[in-house]
Image (cartoon, rainbow, N blue to C red; front, side):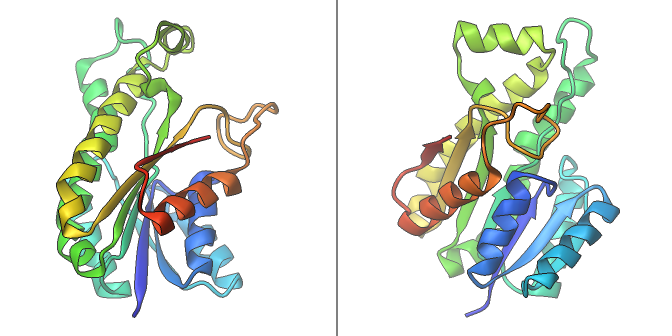
Length: 227
């Protein structure tokens, strides 16, 4: 049976590694991000490895665009078996000076876009006994040291969005388990090599994160893994 995974928020690092990991296991891969150029390079790289892939430039913070995305992927690659959400926004870094609409932007990408994607692909996911796989960051933790770091580096909006996304994962996991749809999350607590957060001292290999996602997907037992 044909399998398709949507990789939302595609770029160097985790999402690229996830695309290769699942593609190598027989999934067709739908790469999604705003940059058409980045997506084209990603498709070329995957195809060179014998993986079927297609690009879908999309603003994942816009529910209408996400609805159109799901329909387009289904038409081009077939029913959706897995959804990987790696998208995030660093908007509203300083909550005291940011416009409230900027915080909405961060929330829309982390929560509204993800939820829309799940809703629109739900019939496929149920049919395939598929999965929703979410990347999250350690900023979600409600601890003084984490909050101090978020304030220091002006990533407060991201911290709020991560916390809300974490709650959404838990709720979806409970809601969908009776339908045979697995929901899991990998929480990344450090910098990932090859990403925008890598300033030469990143310690986490993106292939390790991709393997964590594959392990969660395969075992379908634990909701959360941490690296």
